[in-house]
Image (cartoon, rainbow, N blue to C red; front, side):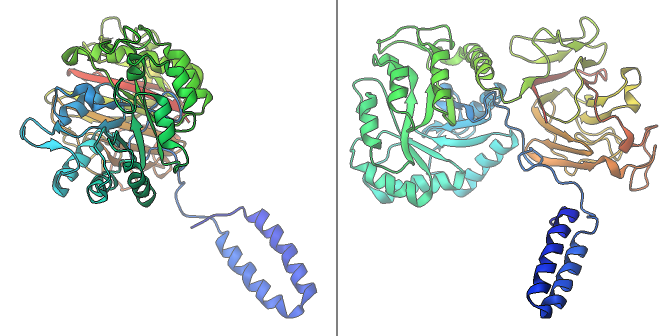
Length: 510
């Protein structure tokens, strides 16, 4: 039901009523009927407050450092692994966006099965469910071979539509294929981008890519491979400027040498590319789209360099156009309150509990989105506390989202529950040793929790009107009614005597 500002609407209609009466007294009856309907519509709404449309209340949050830049992974970076392993490694790095390529082994259990557009409906659904459980999105596909054969091309576009893919990346050998590709792009409303492999490949020169795009649909564009341009002796900034308005995707990278085909990838900001200047040019053009890591060196030990690259990119991106997302804790925990030696962050960004106490933020948060991952040991118990008004009495001045390997045995003790107050809608916790993900959104009296791709909590604090009592009549342990709990306070992670690990803890104030 749509609610309205009754006073404003009534004032407007009062004048309309006068005008109508003056024009024709016979319309008086109709006006009064209309006003009665309006009055009924303006009666106090019994609906619960609805959140802003852009809040992650049913899906996991997107935590990119720059609004509009989707920092993701071209899974070719992990081509020595299966598709599922590559997605896991991408999730480990805290990335949301996936660019898949055809031909990657799907899983170790079925080594002959490849990820591509020939997957069956059942196999596709398995892939979609797996990606969704991670809070990730498959948005790009390529480099895939397209041709002048519309029937064969259509199979790729059908696959893309089914999987939610927004961009197909290709290098057709016959330029006449672009007429067919353009037609299908318009029909399916899916973008296509020409990719540049190094010289002497057909599209290595940005002038050729520009020629392909000329006079074509805006859905036809370029996948700008920065590393391959540099291997071909092309200045990436000049190429980006030349292709302004036509770039749909970036394969991002930095190299140890310029103009050498055999040059290899290095951590961004440490090689020959002026990465910050490239990013500034992207910003100047108001680029909106994916920026995909494609790291083609040290294949089995590339993660540390990729992690270093992401830190560099996010630092620069935040300085150019911050999205508001920040790490909950600094790497040295200097913004946290804890007993010495109880918690530490390792070189992989994993926050581990060594025992001996909680960890709390020094900063207080009111309305926010908190996104994090956690891994449990066997039988582990922990929790995320927020809006703690008094750390000396946090139990009765804060709200806890329960973390548990199964359940503590109580009605409201399963993983993801608002402890002792509201049970999770579904039990979606993963077994010990696997990573789980939470997105916790707090907006005034509303609390939402998404776990592993499923909304499990939709709570209105104002429904908890009595201390020690839940709306359904069951008892809770709290001396303060939840409607009266502080709406601003510290965020903490619980030590319950069990090993537990956290990673990718990010927060955004709203």
